[in-house]
Image (tube, rainbow, N blue to C red; front, top):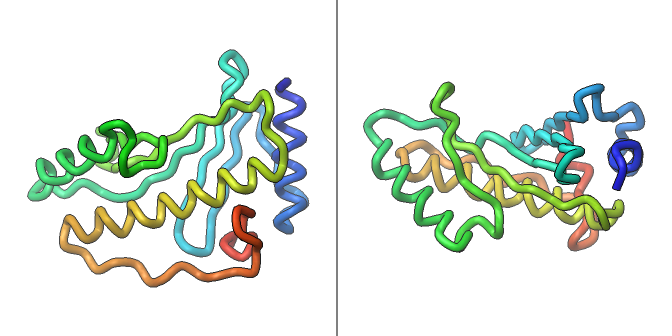
Length: 158
């Protein structure tokens, strides 16, 4: 898929969810804020023809660092608890990140919507898991929308 095609796909996605002005910037990046607290970053890498999705799912308190690192390593083992995504640490900001790559060569709008919906749900679940691990109260239940199964739910966007 060409750079122009992924930019158009993101525009189509924006229109589909009611954000007609949504577009990738000159660095092939766009950021979405969801109603349920997920900040979803999309970054296209033309050389590899992949769309990198990433979001922060928690902070790393000093007193729970070892326990949290163990949980993240176990989750990454054969991607058992991450559905193919990767848990990682941004050491400069002391945050836990969830990241995934999508090969975009055969990506279309329905696939993109399904992938983004799955990824935001996974981010929500990991955010709650990390809050539980570090002894914080879990988030409230995410809003439920009317999107059919496997489709991105636009009610999740702020």
